Image (cartoon, rainbow, N blue to C red; front, side):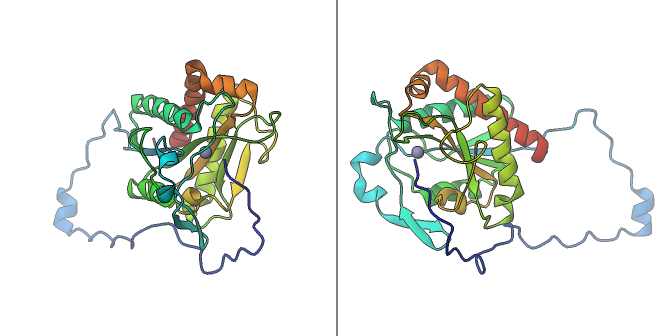
Length: 270
Ligand code: ZN
């Protein structure tokens, strides 16, 4: 769960970055006449190898965060010149099923489904009992992996029990090219996956299941297409029941994985 902050006062000038490309490669040398004559076209393979694609899955929070407030409350860079606490504990259902456990379980299921399709999956944390990592480190993991898509998985803790449904957040205004159209396309693909899986659009946050945000550090600091999925409201009885069940988590995971795969196929050459 995150508080929405206003965009008022945001000054973009000076912080807009070009997508993280290195300097362009030099043009290839012009072959000599002899080389041109002797060159033989490469054989055309009937089976084209898939482009290797990496997806970074970021299960929000961590099971050990509550015991180390000294670590998770330390301020870290959050993008746009702001700082934020390293991490937070997350929310829970009224019956005590913790968000970090839900996020972890769903992320593992999404990862298995993606790996079964040949996607390389990198997680931002190794288990559900540790502390952190900080939000800026989570973004750095996606950047270092050169991820085709970064998906943070969360569940919300809206105070109104009537609040329900999912929304997908992306960084806006974008701070680099990856946060522009690619992140919006990823958000739309994940939204489509969740809709097709039978999950309702949020009735309390965002618009049509999408939420442009300027205050989420992991999105602000990403140099790769990145979204944050709030799967639903853990304080809503029906959604809490779904999230607390193995079947419900499997359905969330299948829907998210289907959206990510659609994005990879349409936009990442997968
Ligand atoms: Zn969360």
